[in-house]
Length: 401
Image 1 (cartoon, helix red, strand yellow):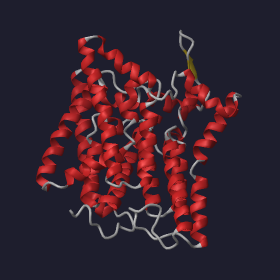
Image 2: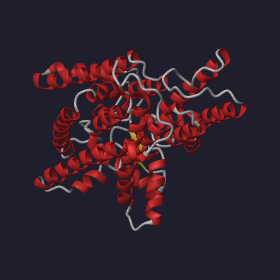
Image 3: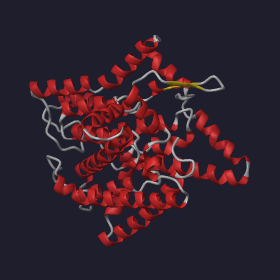
């Protein structure tokens, strides 16, 4: 048994002082990524700030912030790209910040992303610390920072904002703060379609806790790893029920509004996604995409890399199950992985779509937390340099569509 396996009780409240090493390490990794991007972009005569704030999805978000919904692009093949595909919380925040500060909408998106990425790092630390202890929490944050596509965390995209809301909602479930969990899940549902994963986590944890309260009064929490007290009082039961009711409201409200706006009813949002040739097919299209890579030798290497990457994700998820990761995290991670890997389009975007699945990094974080600090720091620094260079190369090339 190690100190990672014998924790007496998780911390009762998130503490910025405890999270400071993780946040400082995270800021250092992200700063390194931005410096690498600036150097690489400068050598190619490109603006790194434009790459971060005014390309790809960033343009769609700022257009929504400035002009609202209703804009669409009709492609020669008949596809219709509508900005209704983009959930509203990030554009709302961009509009708010633009209104109260002398910032353009693009500037506001960049600021929101930077602040949200720090909030996400703190939330990841809080969740990992609750389950595995502070050293694993620091390592989990650093692993999230050094993801190969970690540069997206500094872009005016919604991944950082969503991850922050998801992480703190999961932490609220683990610590028994059900109303906060539901409210944060509702906000996550206003940020990205994958907000469904947060809603599922809140609902599964809530149902399990209700069942356990009925079958074994006086037992502990929503699952056996939280070690938080049972919620059997009338007020606590109502708070739990209220949190579960709040959780789906954000996503449901936007999807129903899109259906009303388009005149196509509750399933109108699916038609919007279909215009982008995006949907859920159980992974069939992605599997064909991978198989097609093996038609020539250079692309076969990419195909092999994709297979290894997917296998690694599944392996880490299975390890999390075997290590007794809280069911809340397993449900959330499972839904994020399923939605990302089984989407029928935008295969180049899958790495960034997988970014919010941070609990899949926890087995690696536990392993990294066991060696001496100096060895862990050396490994992390080496990976950070490699991913900073890759992020600069990637964003100056194909980048995230």
